[in-house]
Image (tube, rainbow, N blue to C red; front, side, top):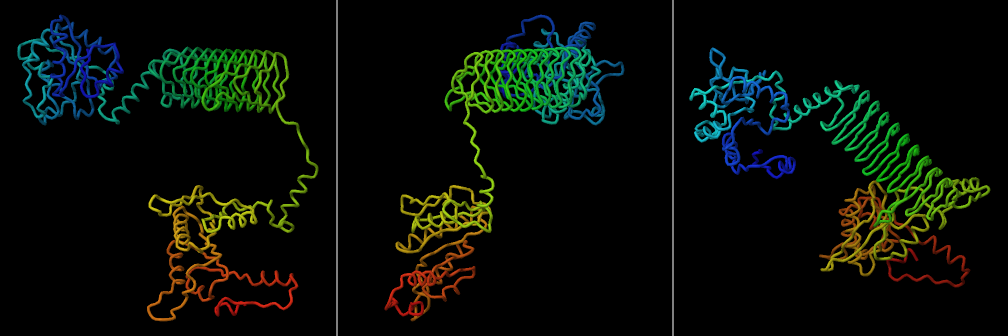
Length: 598
């Protein structure tokens, strides 16, 4: 019978149908908890053992010893006690001058003299069942906690003149109550030592018991050696004379005699006798490894039947497969079992030989005794005793290295459309003013235009998203502030802000046409200087450099407190017209500001 309250469903899930349950809806004390079982047990005769749910370390031997003491004294109640070096928090066993138990007093209700007592109540009792449920109705909650204490039953029986006995266990750690993570850790240490001690008594060698973790459900054969860092979980059965570890995890699996598993994981699988696994192998669930098999380093086996004497010595993935006997899987062998939606089966029949770096694309069968050449990708069944070669024919390009070295020589290389710029930290981004220009600049340099998008919210606002990492990069944004000038300026400012917030190393603005440049001075009262305003906006947004082309007036450069390069097109234009060999040429300026340039 299990009394449940808070967390009842978790308790029931753990115990299942091994117990009946009574619900304590309100947690009003230990006597109140026992009282919930009255409708189930009150009519029964005999002895009832009451155990606290937070004392998981109690052994059957201790409970049998307590029951024997109870029967020996024909007691109405027998208390399981223990000696605690630090009894703080425990109820104290108070005895008279003859050693008989007088009462149990809770720590919070104890006086100074009673708190000096080191014999503590473990919360485990043997009761005469009839007397327990008769007297429990008399228990009150007149105490510091306002709770119904089960030890008060003992005091009532004592006052009736009934026999009260006590059995002191020599193993205090068995009585440890687990009420926080510290106590849980201590309980785990005690349990680990108990389990490991029993296995060593049974003939198992634990090289470092303090660093070996074994499930209480595990069964391990004689003369098996377990190295440090090994974790054995759940229902594990390991045969005799095996070697496990170091740093190995085995979960819910069967391991055969004389098998060696080093620095590896085996989960929910069956491994035969005389098998070698590891280091750094992973046997995933639903695998069955035959006898005398070798699974080497960095091999992963999943949901596979692996036949006797077969080998996968290194760097392979074998999933959803049936591997026959005496099969050799070369380094890098892979069963390609998943097409994105479904898993498919690979069959490798007895005696087959799979060359290194081979892909077997399921569903596929490699016949008995067949060979697969190294580097093959097999997509069709291979007949028995056949050789499958599924790879491209080798091509040798004469003098290729010499030519590529010459091409990459900085003294001879020129940028062409086919060259690629070597600095991966250079990024070029385009907005909407002239994406074709940005594309041509990127092609000439030998890089791709950066991935970004310029969209509009439903109310017309600009939405920009940078679609690649630019952390630590030198970023260049190509954007003229030409018509529609206001749209293009906002795109540019938002892009600069986005790059800055994405941790770009530098943000360089390339402006072939610098908008709002005509108002570059105050020609009359109450007139703005928009060229200066635009410069301020770029700096505030986060630009670190501006590259302009033929600014409306050179003085605009003075409006910036960051580096600005004003590139001049005159040399290029001059060279172009010189090559035309024109006569009687007239150069016209659109306004007086361009006379000097003309």
